[in-house]
Image 1 (cartoon, rainbow, N blue to C red):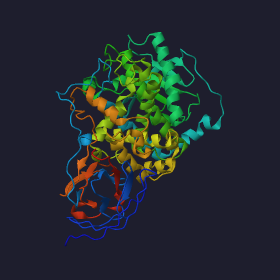
Image 2: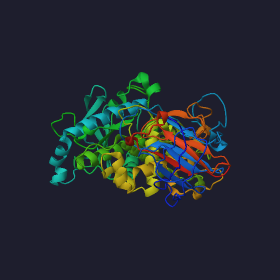
Image 3: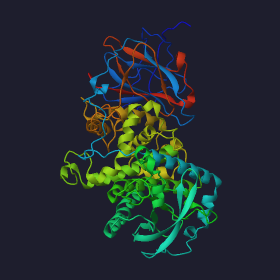
Image 4: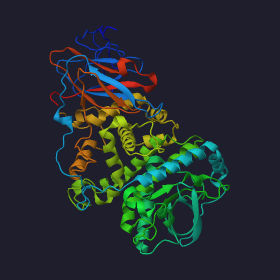
Length: 593
């Protein structure tokens, strides 16, 4: 087939930047192309510097035309779908006009320092040390999978409806501190094995009942430490989670969430794998919502946690200080899972919330712990930091790693980690970083009240977001993809970038740059800015992108070209399936940047 130019009529269906609407212009006839023009709907895209647009190519179009004359653009191809699987989709991207193939230093991601790989700084306290999370993620995978199966039986809702909580047939009954009771505790995630433990009520607060296994090893908490620990969960962490996400159900009608600390949880991690895979710091088991017919159900809202074991008598060694660094963030993470499951399955009589969204919200829960201490000890106060150069106060360190490290890994190769299709049935951290970024972005756009709405919305994640925000998911996904690159640009004040194209709670680029600086040459964090803009050239480039992902390119138009047309298509120029919801986010970059 002969390749030729025909008049192009291209315009974005919706502006990504709210007020930055795309201005339609008369059709033009570009020259010099090497592919067939197959316009996505509209006319030539013209943008002011700092403005953005979304071009919808889901209807069979494969080309987009932009105003040229030396203009530079961020181009973000996307598959804004939650349909299908995570099989990579091959695509071509090219320009029919000779455009600059250079990448500006702003986006080159060039190393700012060199050196051999080494762990993150820990002694100086500039950033928290990473801990291996494979064991924790594997446990989550099993537990969330069990929750889906249980939800499918319909017995959980029936069990809850029979409970006295709904019947309001009894007053709240709080056991006396020092009293004991037995619990069934999951002792092997893979074999679904349980052990019976006896536990003493060590702390009774307004929101949390803290039980300690009677077989807890020695050299652990002092009486005051245990009281302080219980107070932290009761007065600080529980309100953080419930204010953001809402309250859990109260199946056991005690008005509290139980926190059970047991060496059985320690033993869930083999001692030989502590250094390589990490350990399970705590978990929530949806099986506890089962009724009396399940002999392993404790019929209540319970968070299970490790106990101090400095002498490593059970598994990995854990001091009281270790627990203070890891268990609080795990509590927030798991309490969100508990609330999410309560709302969608028990109260909503539906399926569990979308796994990718559920995980993103749980990482937000961890981040909220950090934000609490960041606000309590702001940098300007000069308090709460062992080292004045720390980005986070001492008390926030244990809440940081989930959103900080995982989001960096996502930003490095976002096209390989589907946000909307990965779930806890799979390992991997990159998609979790992307899920947190999207959940953080949504709250920055419409307010933190969106989190409670997401807990109460449809189980389908895309529908849930649209209902909670009142906006189409495809538009939000386009803006989100742009914001990953445009949140802080050299030569353009951050505040001058429209709100949909940036974050507000976090300057994510500043976080990533600090992570790079303090990593001392770690191969895990090789660049100060992990978001790399690849050049679009006259030669067709074939690449791959998973559904539910995006990637970033840069287009520098020649000064002598009135317009430049790019192709975003499948192999051989074919249009994408409509199910992929193919689209292109576009942002006009500052001159010379």
